[in-house]
Image (cartoon, rainbow, N blue to C red; front, side, top):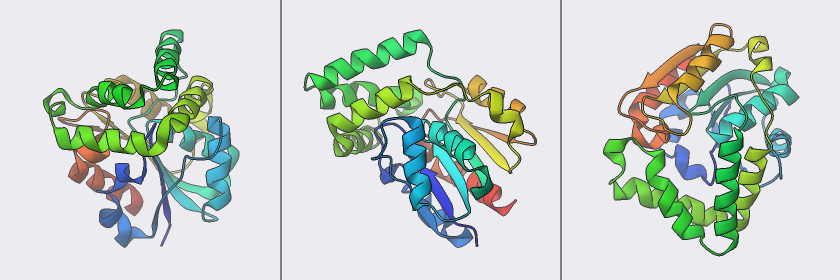
Length: 230
């Protein structure tokens, strides 16, 4: 069976994929990659490749998708399938980078928990923004990563490259999945990737924001299981 490596998003831990591990285990061993090493997206990718199986199915959510595309650039021969969840191939706009730097300044001033509470609802579908279980889970993951990790990952995201040009060269079965109300990486970003990647499958998850694996785990699990069965 083919191993699967899943990469969490910004200020997320393995808890981001907690609903997926038991659902996907029958398809092969599942590893949640660490994003604790590397000051750039390329550095994170290299660290994950160092510890990854020789060949594996690869999935990433949000920042994890940026890293997954970089892994595919660095070692295409090792990736047998690709899943891009709630992510984008485009680099940051100047406005997005400015917003990230403002958050970095607040976190460096000791406001990590306040920043996490501020951004957590924006990751969710409007109907889920009062769900304290989801809010607290996201805050807990961010606190576990810590202020230094928040800053390091935001700087890495600001510096990421444009991943659109290589999309047409992807030759492995690819799933592109996004929540229908994802405010951070809207569905048009996923539509763009799916259109550029040969034979990619696009799944738009209803009643879902940016945190698809937590908001609609059953739908995401079904899409991932079908992807692994291809």
